[in-house]
Image (cartoon, rainbow, N blue to C red; front, side, top):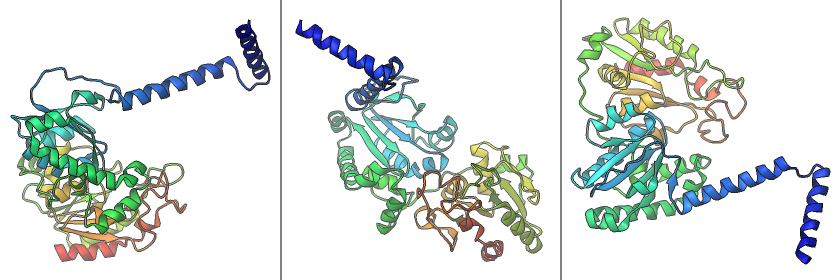
Length: 395
């Protein structure tokens, strides 16, 4: 009897709340669904170690160590993780370990990792953590998501000490890791103070020794240069990232404005009329360029075009990293980003003299100037004549 009275009281309370508009059946269903979702995510991440929804499973039995490297970023981030993959492959030979790479697309894997045997298999972004013995994931830095201590100790005991070094470093910098990406600016400053950069940061957090970036690979450029009538010709490559596409009444903050490019090309041709200008990337062609290859090359051809150039000029981004790993002389323009963290040894870095380094000051710092300017003043502040002066030193 007491239980029925209690039940009636609860029902009456729900009816009263429903009449007052404070709760309804739809609200109850939504609450229960969110509770279920939270419980599912908790169990998935803490106990079953499932990472995202699996789109492909690897049930093939093997006695080798299964290593997964998941790069949460684009081409530039993948290139900066090459040193880590190189060191990992040296300590994890094919006869004892299989290395799986999860990155933006399969073309990156095939062009920059598979050909040099840095990774054995490509997988998409859906996978089960329990299918692997060792998992590293991240973007600027990669952290250990999982490691099977017993199996690693049996197969590759020398790897275990490296993992434990990496775990100590990750714990030491846990404030930055947990706050990513909103602590990115502070993280960059801290890494610079330790003489670390984007190239060797993945190695540092994985527990390996810091190393200088190797050349990407020895590539033959004749076929691609013949295709675009560039063989035996002197040319420079410019990376004009499209900044004319508006996003919420603003322009992206990292590209050099179009009028600056046009002014630079005009003055460049007056001084170096015999040198061709080849434009890569972007969605808008610069009419002043001699050849526009926007959307006309795959990744391997893009690397070959850059490799055949006498100079690369552009803003911070994937092509700049590609030129860096190929050892190309480059002039890189920096506004929101820190050159000290992103630059390569052979670069000439031109940094804005006003309001620099606004990385993650706001959530949309890439697409809108944090100070409210329609066009980011930092990049506009880099003068075309200033760029041309540096070009003269190299040519």
